[in-house]
Amino acid sequence: MTTERLVPISIVGARGRMGKTLIREIVLSDSMILEAAVDREGGAGLGQDAGRLAGLHDIGVTVVDELRPRRNSVVVDFSLAPATDANIRRCVEAGVPLVLGTTGLQKSTRELLRSASREIAIVSAANFSVGVTLLTKIAGLVAGSLGESWDAELLEIHHSHKRDAPSGTALRIAKAVAKATGRELEGVMRTDRAGEHARPRERGEIGVAAVRGGDSIGEHTLMFLADGERLELTHRAFDRAIFARGALRAARWVASKAPGLYSMADVIGLGDLG
Image 1: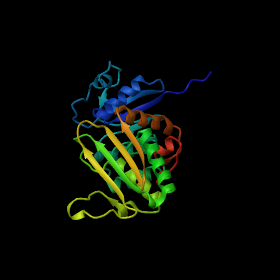
Image 2: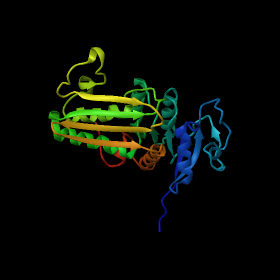
Image 3: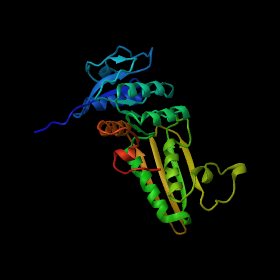
Image 4: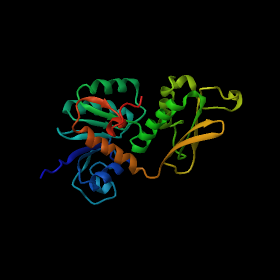
């Protein structure tokens, strides 16, 4: 009888909300083990046991400020964008796969990511929810079937502290709709219908609206509207742990993959989402 190998995971951004959730999920897992917990230099949690940092018992892994991944491990990075270049290079030097959830990357970092993917396997995503990944795929399939005769409108809701609007996830879904109907999102997306932007809706445009308030983790509703009927596709997130679980699913998956730049669609077997 064979036993599945425990995948060693190094978490970068350990003190963040996502980092702590990742640590808790790994400790509770029977297929992964926490190898390292890394945070920025000078951070308040340095030297603390990672388990205690995440609100659990001591686990014998101390939070450090330097990433030193070992072979046969996977790095999961949810730190800040300025640290991403150095983290990518350390993964390449060590020859270990990377799961990257850091957002707001500069063009130079995205280019470095593509270059690094020729040497190591990388999963990069702005949203690691399996449900959102499926919604994005379904959005393209439905849009391609209905065509421009159905109006496409997207509503996204997030907590009051979220800065960017529309959300990156909303833009990804809208892009899938545009691509399925042979258009570039930049040319058809409309986010404002008030004041000087007020006018009748044009055929083929994709409306994207953002609501900010309360503690909503994230809700995306894509509507296809025609005379006499409306089709709605909705995903609601109720627990931030879904993003951690998706990222760790990606980590287990990428541990055995050849070099390349992958997405969550690849992880769950859907292929390219565009």
